[in-house]
Length: 482
Image (tube, rainbow, N blue to C red; front, side, top):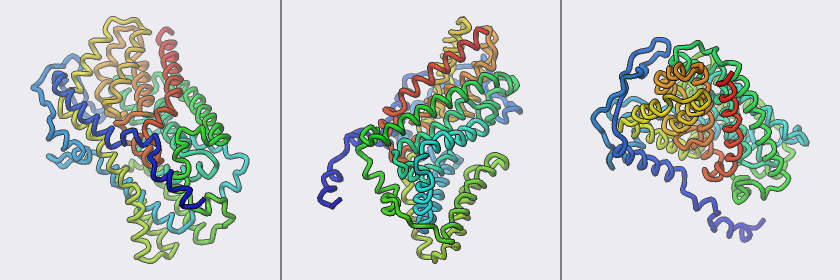
């Protein structure tokens, strides 16, 4: 297609671009939450150290109003910075995640400069021809396994730049690639079984063994996965049959230009060289080592970042790139994900404003008062609704567990339901909300990497959210009356 033919499309803004960017949405939420600190009374529960949880938790029955600390214009402007690190204590908030994203970008920039990924995608598409649809449930199973066992979340950001080109080359769209990762891992977290950052922390905070309610959580995991995989596969099949049915159809050409090289897009018959094969081996081994380190060695962002930095150097040596070409590729790759890193800090700034404004405990106290005296079914569904609302304010699964479980779980004793049901309601609600939560860095970061506008993602996923919500409510209600 000629430049003249493409120029009008490039110059005219797509309808989706008229919707505010993620930066505007998040900054607007910071302003809204700051305004709420002037309206909602400040309050706090007493905290006590819980050795089983490994941190201080709220003590039921100790809520009291405290001196208000409303957040003004200065605090609003400081919030994005405080989202990265506390400017008073210099304690890290999201700076480690943002730096990790930049190091991933540098690693991918170096790998892409070798041409190994583009050639590998072309080879994979030739091998999968006619069977591409089966990679959707297979990959979703792998991400769901990570979610249900160790709460795979921030680590998934490394997989978007790898998987999305593969999915687009298979004839699908970027939304399909984002859905495989975000929904796959999200369903795993929603149906957590042994996830230490959700199920185990929440169970400890609720003073019950984490194995309580395991059968119900397994049922929700399997049922939720089947519903989600079928939903994504159905959407992907429609897009492949008719690209105009994609929710990002207006971005089809620009996404193909961004994610695919010319040879990949045209189905090149190029074959991998020995150096490229070695690069892909290092590439795959890096992610395998990352998963091993996170799941068994307690690694977090710093060590994962060091792994990608070291792997970049190994790839540069194998490809014999030279110092200048290697440095340029690394910096260019990090630059591609700079916007994602900035969005992560901005999302965390919302939580900072709420914590500084001392309104989290007040909202929790109001919730505690609202559920007293309800029947079993009404109680557990009220719990699900409360945890859903609180998840928008506290997207961290461990943070929400520590905040809410010590207060809400004991109320189950008076309602005649098991505390394990409250834990299940909490993690199901948190997992469901974090498929769309604009305050959750993984959502905003994943969409930014996949070039999927937030409102397009909502348009795609809202039917699935409704289906999953009905399924979860039905499961909790049935369990409550058993």
